[in-house]
Length: 145
Image 1 (cartoon, rainbow, N blue to C red):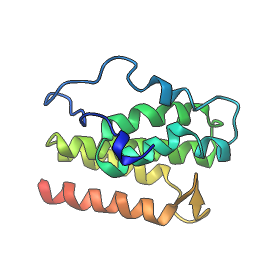
Image 2 (cartoon, helix red, strand yellow; image 1 turned 135 degrees about the horizontal axis):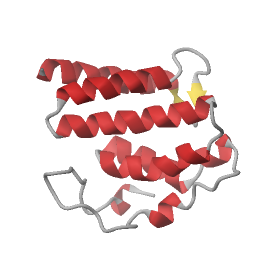
Image 3 (cartoon, rainbow, N blue to C red; image 1 turned 180 degrees about the horizontal axis):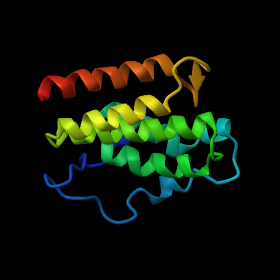
Image 4 (cartoon, rainbow, N blue to C red; image 1 turned 60 degrees about the vertical axis):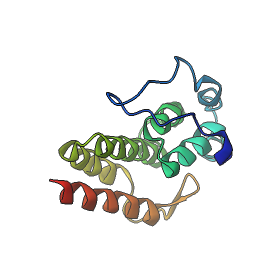
């Protein structure tokens, strides 16, 4: 998915209109249970979730990353990592909603889920870079208190 295929708007609960039901279903369906972590990392659901996360579509990122998380093996590093990305998206959304305390709680959860040291690359992402995203959000939230 390219930037020109982004949703019409970033949904922010209580501030604008929610997307139609099943608006992201064709993307979500690319996270096929039974695929391994490398295959799921290449799925449209995961790649689109990353694009949405980077472009400010945080609610939408959660929507398309959730089936990837659910398809990964329980207790795997990859499953925890994707859950951490979802919490990061949720934290960024809460920040947009003016809820820095909720953001800090979600930052803490994301930090616990994203591995601190090894491996360096998970689901095609540099773990250190993801920690930088988490740290940056925490600084913004703390300064908003």
